Image 1 (tube, rainbow, N blue to C red):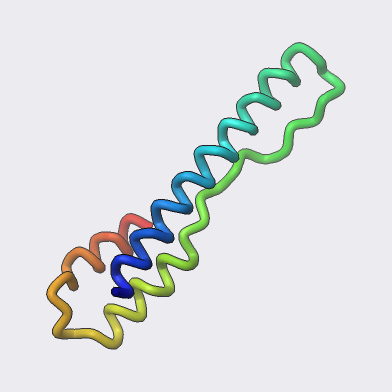
Image 2 (cartoon, helix red, strand yellow):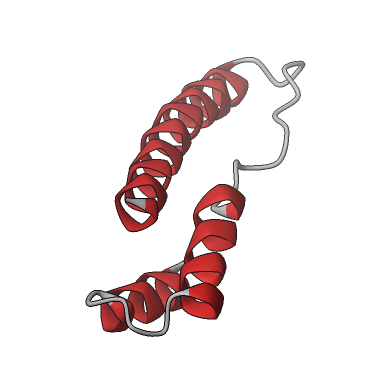
Length: 77
């Protein structure tokens, strides 16, 4: 159950990043036409919730059948 929740958090982070990056790109394009527009730093992906759950799974569930997948996803984050 925790693995699926961590996976859902991962997917949410990816979607939030995509929306933020699209907005960043839109503002960057607008700034090209209007130099007075200040563009902030590009967005960063935030996997903190997924990382916390993957670490919890790895620390407390050594007999979990998806342990290799949890290691993989933790490394991906």
